[in-house]
Length: 476
Image 1: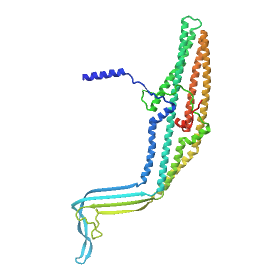
Image 2: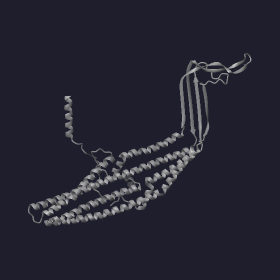
Image 3: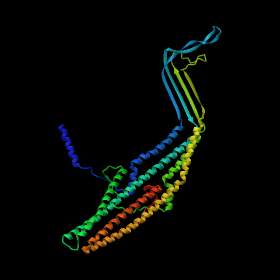
Image 4: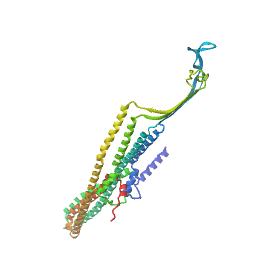
């Protein structure tokens, strides 16, 4: 017990010295495209949704397996069986030339003697409704395409989420670095002003120093928001990538900037939408599947045509097991050898139940056909809406950049005046605050543009990998 106590104490001391688990940083930096590919491979919900495609493929196999000998039964059994003995049957007589009128001989079970028994029976049925099978298989194959399109729609959601976290993380990091640099400049100006007050410089007043300190609120608030944004995006990326809590991704981009993908004109985007959007693919394949299911329901109202075969053999080894003998009416209930094969037709007499199923399938097909009328139009309008939003976001980013440059020039001029004349230090507060606001507005506008590109790709039906395969980057 004492040894165990010292062992546990030493283990606790070692754990205390080791401290918290160190952060893991991955050596290969992630671009937005590589990050998205990594997330699409590791996202837990996508891994779960991928099984829906396999389930749809298994249903095709079910149709194939159900078409080949759906009924193929083989039964066998063994055990003891009683013997059979001959007894006179006084209910039936026949004329014998030597003996005259004598009773017929019957048989009954003799439970005083037992012997082994063995029996085997086989039944085989092969349907011949080939057209119904082919329609059902085509419907199952179309359902595989529907499941694939549904999975692609899930990938679009995850792709948008990954890109959003990527650009939000860059936005928070860029804003944090810019504000940290501004805080260093503000600290220098504040220290310089405090030193002049201590030296008794009359060109600097206490009011100027207090105004400068009061202007730090916007700066500190922005830094706090940037740190919060970094922490939240880090949490989201860990979940998307399936990483441990101490993992920290490294990005290839060090600051937020406008995306370089070349955006096609609106007409081309509409063509891409009609070609690639998973909702349209799901609707098209769903309509094709419903048409085939309608054929199946229509075929089920007719007769079932099939080939069938049956074989039965049973044998009991006990006393007096001579099946029949000379008398054709002396049938042994245990010894049997029969077989039959032929062409069969089965007609379901509950016609109205089958017809009701046909009407239900027809109604669902008509409902999908009505959806097809407006689905493409609605997606094209969404693409156009995303496109005009992107144009506005790009114009806002360009205007915000001009405002930021003007604010920086104003701050630079005020700083030069303050260097020449210490009494102008109080005039730094207003341009400094406007410069911070302009930087925040600019990077926010850049973030909105980058995210609008992501939303446009999603509206067209593209992940970032799909978009890079259809577009080429802008070369300066």
